[in-house]
Image (tube, rainbow, N blue to C red; front, side, top):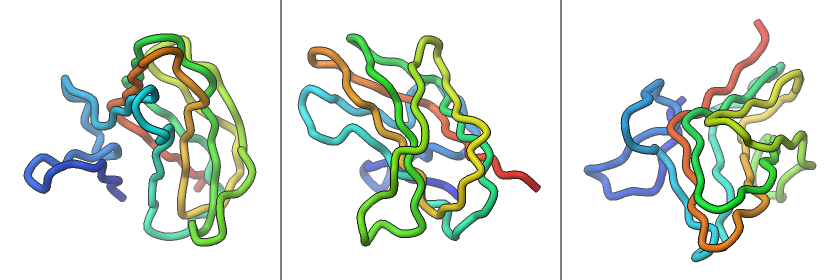
Length: 128
């Protein structure tokens, strides 16, 4: 299911459309906002989520760790952070998760200075 970023109605792009175009689908400036995460709504609860991959990652400054959080709804707060990775390529992935969730939250712990973080595509995989 597509996950839309905030944009004007005529320019909405998706994070999960399979496109790796020349421009990021999502970007945030850690230095100018408290928002350091994105949430994917999968549309329904899926069992056996095995892996999450984030492609086309880039940032200015030094990035901290990325965390992954799963939840069935967003009304009672978020669950525990499931995993963390350091990004040292233009992609990263979480694997061997065995999670059940409708919402997948990817959180960046920090970017030094007035950093900007972005990505082009996010994929969520489940076992058959």
